[in-house]
Image 1 (tube, rainbow, N blue to C red):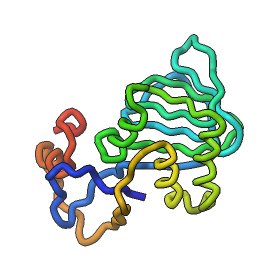
Image 2 (cartoon, one colour):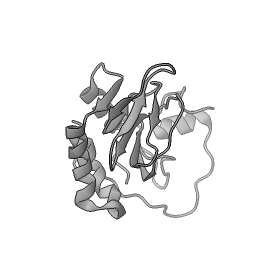
Image 3 (tube, helix red, strand yellow):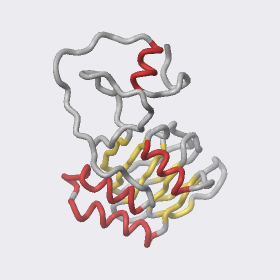
Image 4 (spheres, rainbow, N blue to C red):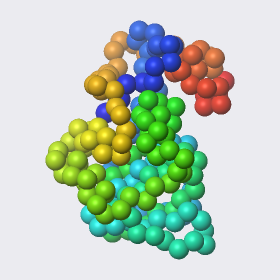
Length: 181
């Protein structure tokens, strides 16, 4: 599912597809990770049971129904033996802005059982096979205001020629640090 790109005044020319969606989600068996960080917002929701989360190598794990981390925030998660929903949100998108506003100054939110149950109910309402349909409800349950309708995209026509770094940045509406020349 692709949510509308952030309005930047630099619309993509006709026939040019954006190279990645602003929201990417997957689900499956959980694992244990070491301390790491992502450029994106990162939501991990235990679809059954609880996760264990920590924010430093030596800190103790804390139980959570879900965890939401801001971009570039170190975290380790133990989701062994659990089914999880993983959601990555581009921080420079409308949805990323919405998460920043919803989370405020907090860099990491450990979601307790009651709030995690609300997120799980969004997934359960549509079933695992229709995960894309659950994402707006999950994001809204986190307090994110979403655009009214998602954009459906599909490749049309021949592949466009490669663009220079500055043209790619203009086309994608991304900062120079995000797209190499």
